[in-house]
Image 1 (cartoon, one colour):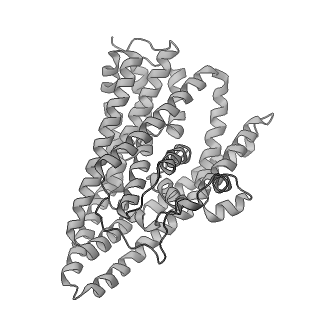
Image 2 (image 1 turned 45 degrees about the horizontal axis):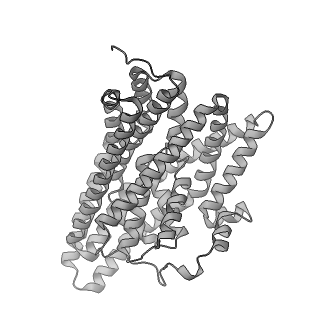
Image 3 (image 1 turned 90 degrees about the vertical axis):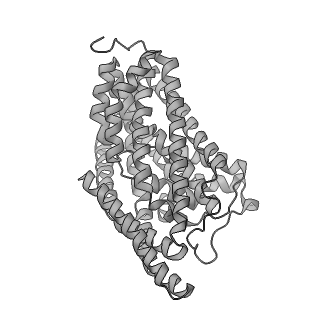
Length: 411
């Protein structure tokens, strides 16, 4: 199924480029190109609306469920503290590398982006102050926050709600069951939405090539190449961390997780690689107690590849529209992405949801999401494999710090 879907996406990309090329070539004038581009854009507009539709319920259900499971880890005290400490460190590294690389490579500079809505959004730095920020963070009404897709307000409410559920005397099992069921249902809904991705990819590429010609694809190559170069650097950093944590055994670790990482790459799903990763970690010598705690927690709170992608893609869109974000705004973006990227594991291409919410928060043109839509699946393959590597390194490091790292099987 995954292989067929991947083939379908590739076919959609090829057909979209071909359709755009034909429309660009036969269009009698610029007005005709704009008109045909508009027809294609109806499909992508519908897909963008569906993406926005799932943001609020998806964040609430997955984040509350994640916090409830975190509370179970309180029984192993310091292990939870060390785990979360590494997750925060890895998150900062991932986001920072993405930020630095997008500034060094400038993949979005010179790109003619999709047309923004009339009166398109610009960054109003004069009105950006602490009071406004607090207003964006603290919801006056969760219903209002959900209606407006105010992602930070939704996250704040979810954190308070999740902690309160976990703090009740019996941990409100009925509520946790309901939240987990909502999360599963929302993942299904997200899967249905993402099943429409081939149509949106076809329309997005067709619209872009119709308007700008095939030459625009050179920028996509620069974007994809730059992102994979950034992932390579992150892999090097993770390997170095593993080497300092477990010594030369890091080579054995990367050898054992090669197969689950390849599975995640080929299916564009780090969740598909979970059983193989858990088995590989135990073969490496990580105790089942540590692996069973760190690995599932990492799938909600340690998505290294996805976090880097969110930074890289958001600033790529800003560059494409010629919008400069100040240093303070970029630091704020890192903090926002560090929070909003949590709890989204298991959702195909959930990074699109996070990026859409981030664009909305900084008033960047929503149409910019179309720039990355056509190649999102290709990039999802790389970031899924990176998520597997990052969580494997986290498990090995925590096991080493706790003295629960045995000799590898067959050693």
